[in-house]
Length: 341
Image (cartoon, rainbow, N blue to C red; front, side):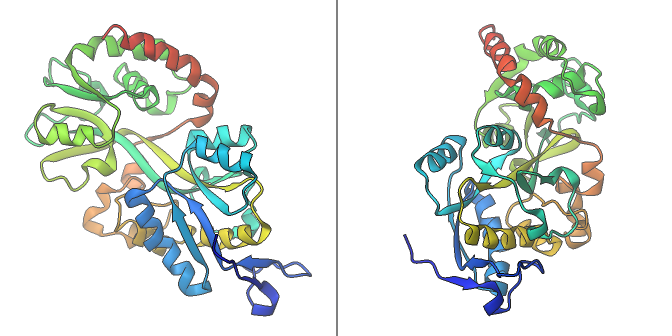
């Protein structure tokens, strides 16, 4: 482990965003995070770690990938070297229930304005991503999921996710449920709709790269996929209408050192700034939690980003609590459904 140098906030004249106790808290000059890797990790480096390093001299060591099992192992081992851990919206609830993460001191973060769903008691929502419909250009374009599931008027092979939480709400939309009435989810209705389309599903994908590649190869004509996989693909078109907006969060690992947490809160503050989020979006076409980011994005590409005003307005936001309460039962039904494919 590298040697850590600690700086007393008062002696260095540095406040934790203006909040100092009588005995100023110490702050690490190097912290560790575990993130999901790939372009998301690179976007964290460019958008948030580099500005933090320039402003404060704090260095952030990134490791990947992240998983609930890895977080459980960290906490069980009693480690104190990793302070930040990336979590999906549903995993935040699991990690909280298992006592693996700590509440965030939002006063210490002192964030710029954020979308409310990104400001969780136990997680900082730093990156939005969407699950949407996509198709090959030149194919008849569906305007909503009712049309996407309409095999007669929109013929062609489909590629759908092999994950019920990424699929069943779209099946409910196809059956006529509006996006503001999706939850509690009518699971039986969703499976009934999937029974109507399953014969034309060529691939039930598990890897996020699959649907875009299958569309480009013309092995399927329609797919439900992650937005970042099809943005900027010249042969493909997409729509955010009826899509699912979700968030990736950073949580504070249980037992992290106070001086590491003080530095981590500074990084979270950088994550809240729209100008930094705009820089992160140049690496990967996902956006952060600021409602003020649109003017900072390329205006000719606003339609590509998950949180652009016109896109956020036509999506539903993932109901992580419903899935936490019902996911196990739904997964059993999903496995039974796949036996009859």
